[in-house]
Length: 273
Ligand SMILES: [Zn+2]
Image (cartoon, rainbow, N blue to C red; front, side):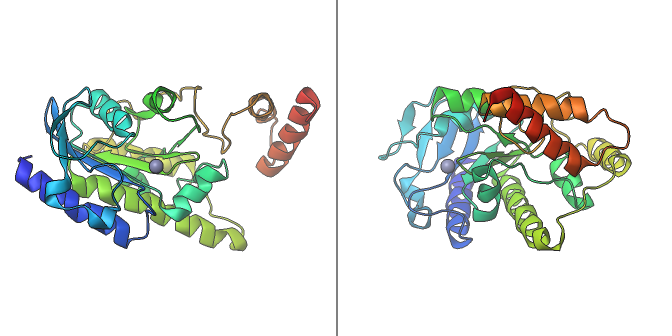
């Protein structure tokens, strides 16, 4: 992408993010790839509504500033890890949209997939990445997911989405937030109904055929940092719960809600919590 166009798009989506109510204070950050080793990004310590063309900065793949008067944001290492893992990705956006962020703050992954169109747009997985300290632990927690999906929720943080251009990355983040809002709206009605596995498989196949799939999409989940069952494995108790859920899931005809309750009880017995 030429730099002038990338700068205009960054400013536009930075403002859009603010207007959408997805950021407060200095939250959120956006970047775009200019070449293999040059990236233009938003500055740290700026309200996203105030970012102008001349406030943007250019950094290299190591995060060193090449141009611009302001400093890069601290989560730049996460953006650079995404670009390194996905050479075709040309834009990364991050914000704290309240509904999707609420799932992560509650230690819950989104109950995706429940809308067929969202599977075509985002694949069958929107993982919840474990809450960590900033810096290298955050990069390490994110890495297992980078080649398998195009958007993640991070517990204790917000949503990261990426794509071939800023518009796509932004729309993916928007869709994650929209799904979260629908899931919350459905909760008093009994919660969303997950799509049948056979339907998801067909939608994933169509997505792959259309060339939309992430490079390693559908590969077996990596245990570290995964919370595919809706819980962040942040403690021995959670690890025990996950083990118990796996064991109990093999019972023929088991009711999932009952399995979840039994797993909690087994884990409580194992860990004495
Ligand atoms: Zn954040």
